[in-house]
Image 1: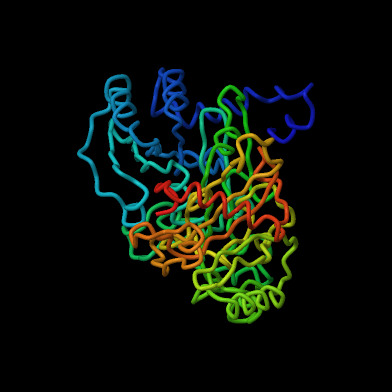
Image 2 (image 1 turned 45 degrees about the horizontal axis):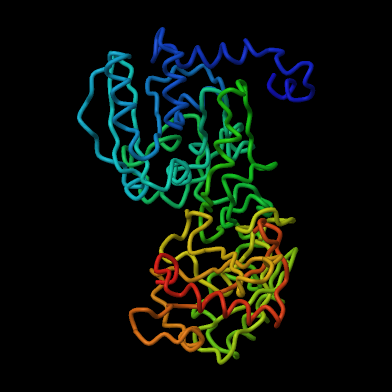
Length: 438
């Protein structure tokens, strides 16, 4: 019905009452006559619904959920809990222990009950709700909805009742895991060998951006006053299910395909010899990278800055966002965050005019630096260029610089030797900005 609505503006409202009827049927047992107030709370708190209610909206498998799961941003848990208790007349059960997989993404988790029904409120840490979604136990559990839309990040598997465990799953004993692992009727796999074919663009090792959408994500909306697409586009989160693919047929399996680069390299390129070696790895990479740009690398032990290739991430065919660049050949931006991270992590853009009397540059530069938790050695070349004299002010690890159109960091341009002087000037003028450089 929703697919039919999307084919033409003349029929965009056809069947709307049918879709809303299912939504109301799922939620009304929990909120009674307070549906409008509940919509208002979900929208104003930028909260989402996941779990069995969201799954019921997608699959309609004649289930009758007894638990309504909500995820709210930081500092919104008390507001949502007050609404549940004061307006919906639930009684608060003491805060429950956060599941082992969510300890890094949730700050609190509470349950309120009314008869056989319960509503849970999970409060995300400061980075937002989508890190919670990305650490769900299975691909099927990465399904969420608002008052006006639904998102399924792995729709083909989920609609077939198939789920792949996420990186966050450490234990499989009953009671240790939540979501589809604990529910009958689901085929749950730990790797994609069940495909009996290469994984392709849905390989668990490939990074994906929440904001990208695209053919691999199902996004449907039944009430544009509560947009789902806008919520996704505001997200800064990217994720992957695993850092190793267990499907022997997959071209991204580093065991069966020795020409697939496992990133970041160990150790990181640091001098002329190791830079040239990494360039060779890039040339030999299978499957071949689709697009290549040129950036400037300030390696920790190099005598001078070097022009190096920067590739489009595996699994992508076109660059539409600066985060689609595969920068990890040159800088370890992950640190300890191996599976879920913010796209702007360890990245900063500078729009600097070297001479205030001159016209603004027609381009800008974005700097990528290594994560502090990588504990990389000091960058000797930047220490020399910027005249750093204090050990505490040293820049640690490699720094990679990308050039792009001014005002549009997603329009990547290739660097040349002429850019190095301008980049050096930016570093000399900004090195004291501790929030990025230290």
